[in-house]
Amino acid sequence: MAGFEIRVKAARGDGGEAARAPTQDGPIQISKEDLLEDRYHRLRLIHWWDQERLRDATVVVAGAGALGNEALKNLALLGAGRLVVCDMDTIETSNLTRSVLFRQRDVGRSKVEVAVERTMDINPDVRAVAVEGDLRYALGLGVIRRADVVLSCLDNIAARVYLSRHCYRMGKPSIDAGLDHLNGDVYTFAPPEGPCYECRLKEPDRKEFRRRQSCLKLSRAESSLGKVPTAPTIAAITAGMQVQIAVRLIHGLPVPAGRRLGLYGLSDVFFDIALGVNEDCPAHGWLDCLAGREVIETPLRADRSTLDDLLAVIREHVGVEGVLSLDDDREVIVGLRCAPCSVERSVLALAGALSEDDARCAGCGEPMAPDLRSRFDGSEGLGDRTLAELGFPPLHILRGRNEATDREVLIELTGDLPLYFEAPEGA
Ligand SMILES: [Zn+2]
Ligand SMILES: [Zn+2]
Image 1: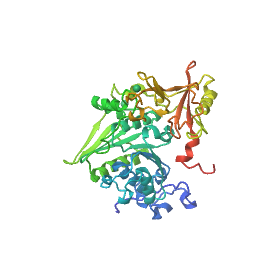
Image 2: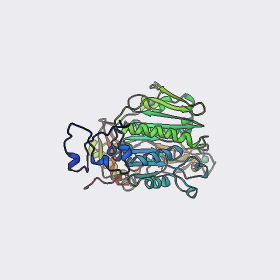
Image 3: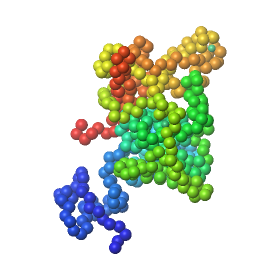
Image 4: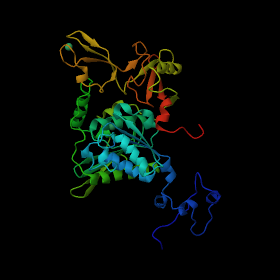
């Protein structure tokens, strides 16, 4: 008896007449696609494998460092069809020990740009799109909405928290991987059920996250990021587990949701720890999961449409009192003020995106106080500014509200869709 069994599969998509013929009882039947030794042949021999599911899958990969490189390499080999990769850094020489996609000659280039290039070079069937920037601001919720799974391949708590909140809002499964020396761990979350990434944070981590947010809502220089001691071996193992769980998830097979799996690399001990929902988790206490809510797809585009355009669409749906409400999303700095010097400066920036140095008072040299807005009704004098200028990423989902009637609407900047996903066939 051979070591494996050939299963008959009803071909989907381009299967010919023979493949579509009803299966008869009897000895082994071999479908046309099993005989064809194409790129995916050995994968299809795994009895539950469905290459078309992988081909049609959308995976967001947040971070193109050591873990992101390994995850992308695996996803490319697997033929995972659409990848959206987000990172803000450039390649440094010290990345080269852990980054299978990067070469010496890439030093100084953008990580995402090189990563998507090499991913598609490994497998031209894969379409990978680069989102260059801080995922807190650059990754629109509409991208997460279309993902089958989100891989968190990040190196700091703040970015993980934001990604986790994006996933919580959209009710998307995410798989977070982390490295430290020769240790690696993988957390699988399936919000809004069960725990989320923030549930596991201890008070010092939360404090560190809040410090980064700082009371001024201006970003502080983040100096030590990405300098975790680690090795390519554990990066390969950990991202391998991460992607293997993602493959099962894409196939609808059971995954270790709400568990922490990993390896202590110095003692070869694997661990598997159940996680619980933390009563004090800010995400569970404060964020709305919007999955299942209607999202209105509109031709609005972040770089072309203005605040007035958006308000007009909101008001079509909730009435003329409709406002843009950013409550649990982001805050916008519309001005800076130094009271002691009676100096004001007009700026337009996202809270957290402006550094203290950018906001220093010309008079006294102290950081000026930001004028923060999380609600726009059109009276701010910013109606002709584009949504991108206000700090909203392409394909974002924004919330409109009529405060009198409590009617709410979710508006997507669907005009940005072609930036990430090809137009459907025939469109
Ligand atoms: Zn939580
Ligand atoms: Zn001053």
